[in-house]
Amino acid sequence: MGERFGQRLGVVALHVVVISGALLTVAPIAFMIYSSFKTTAEIFTLPPWLPPAEWSFKNYEELLTKWPFPYWYINSLIYAGVVTVFVLFFCSLAGFAFAKYHFRAKNVLFIILIGSTMIPFQLILIPLFVLMSRIDWVNHPASMIVPWMAPAFGIFLMRQYIQAVPTELMESARIDGASEFRIYAQVIVPLVRPGLTTLAILTFLGSWNSFIWPLMVLRGNRVITLPVGIATMRSQATASQIPYGEMMAAATMVSVPVILLFLMLQRYFISGLTIGAVKG
Amino acid sequence: MVQAALTRGREARAGGDFQQHKLAPYAFISPFYVLFAFFFLAPSLIALVLSMFRWDGINDPRFVLARNYGRLLSDKVFAQAATNTAIYAIASLLIVLPLALVLAVLLNAKSLRFSNVWRAMYFTPVVTSTVAISLVFQILYSRDTGLLNAPLIYLGLEPIYWLGDRSWVKVAIIILIIWRSTGLLTIYFLAGLQSIPEELYEAASIDGASMLQKFFRITVPMLRPIILFVSIIVLLSSIQIFDEIQILTNGSGGPANSSMSVVHYLYERGYTRLRLGFASAVGTVLFATVFILSLLQLQWYGVFRKED
Image (cartoon, rainbow over all chains, first blue to last red; front, side):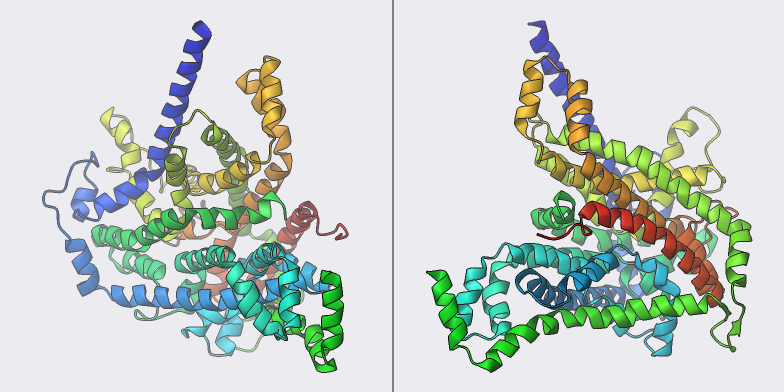
């Protein structure tokens, strides 16, 4: 009897701990969304759960009238979208080659590939920036796209997925006279849609949330991305008049859509993150 | 049967097809290697060369051999940035990692109801823009009206100057790191937990093992490879920390460089002050550090083992 009670208590405690932690985790996001409907003065009024004097979309309207916010949004969408398309193509092609072909120097090439995933790009930040300015790509969309079109991580990920496709399917397509590229396009690609979805989400999010690189290579109010734009709202304001209300609206606009996307595609997202961890 | 068909297929194919089969994989992998050579390898080499020059990007570069490295190693601000970065890394290892491990075990408990809902809530920070959330924390950290100081203010105590105090600013950044990365590590640990056979726990239960005993005697030892993998991920991502500090401190890494990270230092010297040669030396030193950590990680991946 006592043991059962103890077990029950344990289950209750488990729920209390897990749920309070979960609420604590989403609290800053809730605060952000809630604040986006308040004036800056109200945001800094304690306690934070006090509702605004008047619910309004004024902060959101200001984003459209006072700031080039639509440009930032569209830029971010275009950069992330175009990068994602190229990444899907190049990474699945290379992943296919590493998964299904035997060729000379394959092992060495693969080690180079894996090795490059381990080096954070921040380390070549300055020389890469120097290179960009030499080839006149500073403030050019190409700088946001071309260097990032074939990440090694994505190739590794696609290789894992493509390895699971039965090789017999390829062989029979080959007997039917299909070219190697056709085998890729018509046999492999349709069978690894989950892998492609996973890679698409990770790539899109990575580009969408990236900060230091666009901060360096993009200038001018109409070419910068959302995160850089939001940071600009902060840095361009005078200390006493930081538009926190508008910034919270912008922060909501940059994060809530991807959170929703994540909630819908959670399964793919998580499998992409863990594919290397569970066993590389 | 299949084998016979394959042989026939191979025989049927003309020599040209065979060539295609041999060349195709090289064509398929070439985009990566071209981009890699141009945007990664070349800049790395440029960095090595530049690190021996003094250059502002405008005037002619001046050869200074190892003087940049000498300056770097004797620079107090760099020492500060390296120390800060180490503090962030150690805090992540000692706080975030155990927290994520325990959280994963809790989220994996069979008696937990609506587990998917709680998981989703814990994972949201992983996809949230760092810039956006750092701005939110900047408000929460505000001295006189911030939520984090609210209890102190309510009790009539002296509020903490989170972003204006040399020590507290590091705590503020660590709290943000905890918020941002616990969910990510939990995802890894949850994946690892799936690989532990249920029978181990059942056998332990029969032997009368307590929850804690099961955690330390089964879960932790069985997760050792994942724990190692995650700690290397934590170290590598700590070395890269920039966004949070840039936003929370309005780009200053302050007060008085007390929150500055190595990447922030690199950015500030190289990009803001255009000391390109010097910043390249910083990058090279970082590169060496990361390279060693990476070798450890590769070892874990088993890349050096012969493929079967």
